[in-house]
Each structure stands twice: as C-alpha cells, then as structure tokens.
Image 1 (spheres, rainbow, N blue to C red):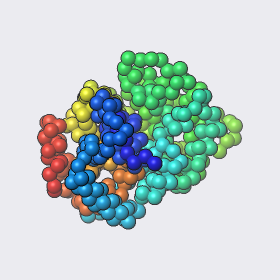
Image 2: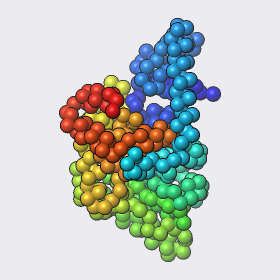
Image 3: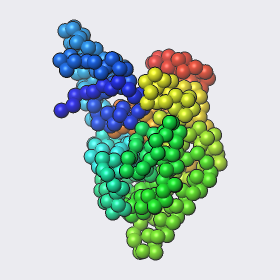
Image 4: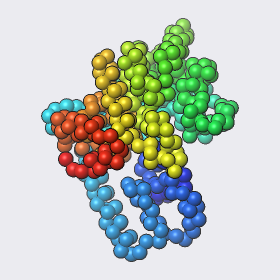
Length: 395
C-alpha cells in the first residue's frame, strides 16, 4: 500500500503530481537531488498541502501532524455527506462541477465524489503501458464502458495529448530539445491522420445515445481548428456510409491552453460549441516557465495576473458568442481560486474527483457579488505575490 511519495523533480502541475491527486495519494514533488539520498530507515512526514517534508520528526511534530490529519479526515467526511448536492450560490446561481478522469476506475470514483459529469477524459490511458497502437475497437469498448457509467451526464473526451511529459515510445516521437514546444497533442495527431481518424470514430461510436462531447487539445490557430473539424466530418461520414451508429451532432470544443488561442478567443468561438481552459499549460506558456522543472515551476502559477486576465478574456469571448466556458486545469479545484473563477463567470469547473466535495461546499457558501468582488480585486493587482497574499485573507 502506498501511503505517499516524494520526487526529486517535477512541479505542482506535472503529470506525476496530477496523477497523485487523482489517486488521492499525498505527494510532494520537486524536492531536489538531496531527496535521492534519504535512507530506507528514515521516517518521513509528507505535507501535500504545503509541499514540505519532515525527515525523522520528533514525537511532538508527529503528534501535531496526526492531529491535523484527523481533523482533515473529519472535514472530508462532512463535505462528502453533501457531495451530491448541486453547486448553487446563496443567491441561486448554479455552476456545473465535473471531474477530470483517466480510466474506468476514475469514472466510478468521480460519481461517488459527486461529479455531475466529466470535463476532461484523458485518452492517453488507452495508449500508455503498451507496445502498439490500440485498435479502433479497443478504444471504442474502453470509451463506451466509461460513457455507460455516466449515462446522460456530459462526458468531454479529449483527443490524444501525447508529447510534453507524456511520451509514447512506439509512436516514434522525435527527441526534441523542448518537447512542450514541439510536435505534441493536436500537432502530432494532425500529422498522423490515421491515428486521429481511428480515435474519432471510436469516440463517435461510444457516444451513440450518450452525452459525449469532443475536445481538441493545443489548438493555436484557426487553420488547426478547421483541420480538426474536417477530420471529424470525415470520421462521421465514414461511419454513416458503413451504417454504424454514432453520436448525433456532438458538441465540439477546444482546450484553450496556448496564449494565442486565448488572444484569438473571439475568432475561435464561432467555430466551437465550448471552450475549456487548460491552466496548467496556459500558465507555463504565458510565463515562460517549465512546469516540470522544480527550479522554475513555482513561476508557472496560474494565479499570476497575466494568466487571470487571459482567463477573463476567454470567458467573456465565449459568452459574447453564446458558448459555455469550462476549466479543466488544476486551478479549477484550488480553494483559493474557486471564488475568483466563479466571479469571472466560469460555467463549468472540472477537477480531480477528490476536490469536488470541498469545491461544491465552498460555492454553496458564496454569493455571486462576493465572488465578483474577489475577482475584480485580483484583476486590479499586478504581481503574483500580491494576488497570493490577498487570496490568503478570509472574506
């Protein structure tokens, strides 16, 4: 049984950190090379909230942390009791709370935690831990099993987001000096249309009589989005010719995770049904800080004023065109950020399933004017430290 773990490298939004949160395992990443010299006999306390580790703590420190752990467990139990209640503010405004998932097991856990749908199904699980591409049939059966768990709840399926910190060796991906700036996500799948076609057909088939939505990652231009829509139309036509049941007119959206997409949101909005803001990558690209590099990962903080202004810009652009806007980055489940995002007008919050009960409870305790005041104050600030200090203060 894994009680917790630490890593020498990585950042708060690295793939490893995201995975640990989805599994509910306490973890501290980016400890530095000295972590590699810990002895197997050392006793450790991992504080996943603060990112700190105590080595061979004394009895008083251990007792204090055990008391904190028990308090946190009691609070979690209490919020879980109300997890299936909707997220409605004190003045009657309701937002959707969804889960980020990456497997069939995650799907049932999300339901148990009170998820009202899925804002991000990472399809990478279909391609990892194997030596060959999954067939269309394999993808269809795996996706259909997840769709059946959610029935008519919304299920946003993201096409393959390989590259960056998610390498798939059998795809013969080139060794790149800057993989996060290389041929990843939609750049890879548009260059491998057979791969994309098989996945789109599987998604469409799995969406028959289900509420599946399709989302393309790493869109940075109008032409890329048009290519994606053309690929989708080709997959739909192929299934229609074959007489294969498929989703009827599924909603199509994009991840807004490149600053170019945020800046062009007004131009992109007419071509999609929704936006989903991916703050993990949006922050690292906006702030030029590798989120997996512990030396600079803290700089890639999505609460930075520049990122908050881009988030507002995307939400306002989406709403101007009558499109709903969600967020599937880690920021969506951050208790400090939830009131700000609510105040900015975010329609859907998608997060690690374990964060859902607390996020719902927080939203139910707020009014929209309270949240708007919080958001407006943050937008007036010009430095990350000032935003962090302001948000650390109670309402």
